[in-house]
Image (cartoon, rainbow, N blue to C red; front, side, top):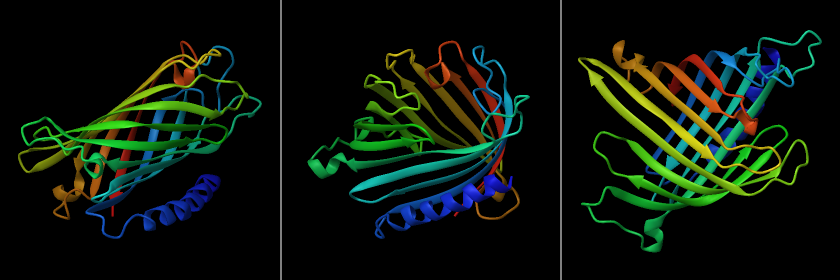
Length: 265
């Protein structure tokens, strides 16, 4: 846990710098901390070659930020996680981190506008970076935003996906990533809830790296509203993740879940 907190503090410094670098005239800005405890993660500290059927429980601290202005929007998150289960020789990594960052330019800057009657509210052009300890992926492509009643966010991005740093120094093919993102608040009586999440579809990259699907929805209860504090600030939730062919390893399908508390500021 000390190592996990050390990684978190180091990452917090980086994220604070990134957040402060976002435009001061942003129309909207939000940063969130999530504390997760979950089960059934594969390819973790206790990964057993070649079956990879071991699972581990895991603690995760997630820092997440989103901001937008007239020019574009910035989104990033960093996960700092620690696995609890280990192999007998304890050769696996106890804690690690993973992050993603995306910046999209609003298509309106280039005259790409849609009428009020269109379900498409915008077309943006984005670039991204997915970064782990021993791999890096660069992404670039368009994103469609949909103005559907009830959704705060509903978007579909299609990106070129280039794995330019690989832990095994393989010459991997450039492929695609299609990402659907949603954020849907609703109420039942006086209680408020939020459904949010994403689905990633990633193509195969050759060299035994198969196509992947990551489906990760969250269900959140607005605890802040329930205890008569500020709404949309403090949540209790559950997250489920289905990871088909995890990390491109054929047949390694993860079905993990976690309970979490989150705080927005």
